[in-house]
Every structure is written in structure tokens, then in C-alpha cells.
Length: 448
Image (tube, one colour):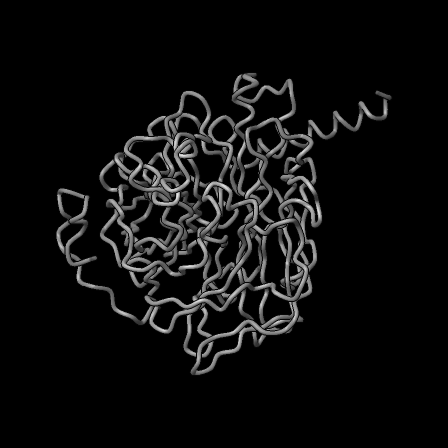
């Protein structure tokens, strides 16, 4: 290595350490208190009468939103996008062929498919992972519909790779009629953002179990009017760092919520900024970050798995949350530990990939129906089952929407709605009843 290379490495190390030091952290002390408390546990989920689709699985799902974050109305329809894969594919292989499809509903309960979003165009990557969608028909930009997504791998690759970068598709639109909703036009795809190696770890720098630079999520700050793009990432922790008291294994757990800004508000132009939050020494994967603003507070939510917590911390597949007084504020974990919503102990993998959105005085959380009826098996053990049993135990559709009370830095599960029920703000929710002691099939009484 030349002196010049050594100087560059030193600058990178110093820069990365500086980023971590000035970024709010989810600490081991906070996460050490994680426990499956009643106020955070959802009821056992059972299969719906009919899945959203008989042809494809769907999992990570996001709603079409307007610039202010509200659920968009396109000709009387609310619209969702989801990662999908054919139902004749083993569930564990679905990420290898993931494509984005569009679904729509007139009542927020019954959903129909509008088909693949990017049919007729060439999306980036060998497959597409989660993102978000912006509906801005009155904006000054080049498109009505902005589809942000994760480009995973490289188009045409013979062997799947796990390169990830943020991408955008514009040019297409949504057209509604009495017969339903259609995706029309031809999309143009462009890469938006790559990790810089200082604020955000590159694939080459990664030492952890999973590399992440994905899950873009558009957000316009109501207090400042500034335009942002959140995403999942990792912060660089160079070998030999003092992080985690020098523990090299702990340093591999370096999840972060990244952010980019659009200086002009143009939804196609972005510049990387320091992360909003990192979880070095705690958790490696802070998936699908998104923000809800309530009473002047900023609530940052992420999904994460039990197996992505660092050794010595017992977490769960769950929705975790943090609160600050501004978007770039000092985030502190909700409920002291960060745990907002998790699965019951006897069904720990039944749902995943949670998305929170406000409804009147409550917070609603949607997710997908994942693996159920596992009889104590781990997910690794599920992969060893005969194919017919793997198919039987995977939901691959929308799960019940959970109702949550949000009060300052405290949350509490109130009840649930039907599978895939996405109400608009003006639509009343069922009357809440006293929560049942048994959170099994009985659930939450009238809130079913």
C-alpha cells in the first residue's frame, strides 16, 4: 500500500468514526431490556378466507402516497405495491425472483391486481426489492408516478449477487375507470444513490451477515417543507475500531437508517446526508424505515429480525420505533427499548415487514402474513420440510391491520382489523372492546 493509499484509508476511518459519533444510536443498554410485553404483542393470525392473489405470493407492501404522506386516491381507488413471486415457487426462494406488482381497492378491504408495474420496460437489477411510490399528478416534475425501489444484483447476471442500490422509475401512470385501475405508459429507470463508504458502508467494506443499502422511502417534512429519501443501510465500522469496546463480532452489527435530501424538492435529485440513527453493536438490519409525524414529534419505525441482533441481546421479529422532536433530532426508543409490535411467542414468525400510518387518533400497522403453524420450528428448519409442507405453512398475503395507541413515547396494541384492511382517514373504525385475555383465535373481540 502506498502512503497515499494509507492516507486515504485513514481519512475514511476518521470520517466513518465521526459520522457514528454525531449520529443518534440505539444502544445495547436500551435494547437489553427487550421483552415480549403484552402491550406489544399482536394476536395469533390465521389464514384469510381468500388470499389477495391465487397466482402470486406478496410480501413487502407499500401504499401509494401523496407528497404530504397521505394515502393517495386515484379515481376512487387506494393503491398498494408489493413484492411478488409465483405461488408455485418455494417460499424461501421468492427473493431471488421478486418483482413489483400493483394492487388496488375501492373499499380498502377487497384488493384486485393491476399486474406487474414494470411490464414492457427494463427495471434495474436482476430483481427488484422494496421501495415506495409517490403520486404527484399536480407537481412540476417529469412524472405523475414515481416508483422508488431497490435494484438487487445486476441485470443479466448468471449467478445472483447481492449488490444493492436505490433506483427510480418514472414515465408511467395510473388510470382509473369503472372497470378498475391500470398501470399505463412506459417507465424509464435510473439509478439514484450508492453508498459512499464514509456515511454508508459499501458491499466491499461489509463484514456482517447481511449487506444492506435498500428500501427507499419518500418523506416531505411538514415543519420545513424539505424533501427527503430515507433508506436502510449500514454505517462503516473499520477493523480495529474502538466501537463495541473493540469486539470485532459486535462491530459486524452496524445497521442504520440513512437519509438523502433533495435541495430543490425535485423527487429525482438526491444528495446523501448523515444517518438519522444507527445501531452499531446492537442490530445489523433496520429494514423499511419510515416516519409518522404526530403532535410535533417524529416517530421513526423500522422492522427487524430476531436473528439480526448482536450476541447477548434477545430481540424478536418485530416493529421497532423511536421518537425525536425533529427529523434530525436525538431519537430515543419508544417504550424504553424500541419494541412497538411483535408476534406472540407461539407464532414468532407469523407476520413481518410492518408499515405504520396514522388514522385519526390511532396508529394503524399493516404487514404480510408470513410463516405460521410451525410447531416450534425455526425458519432454517422449515426449509428442511417437504415442499408441500413449506407451501402449506407460508401465508404470502396481507395480514390483519393492527390498531395501536400512540401517546408520547409510549405505544399500546388496541385491537385489529381484517386482513388487508386499509381505511382512509374519513372512514370510521369498529368500536373497541376490552382486550381478550387469550390473544389466540379470540383475538380482540369486536375489533376483528
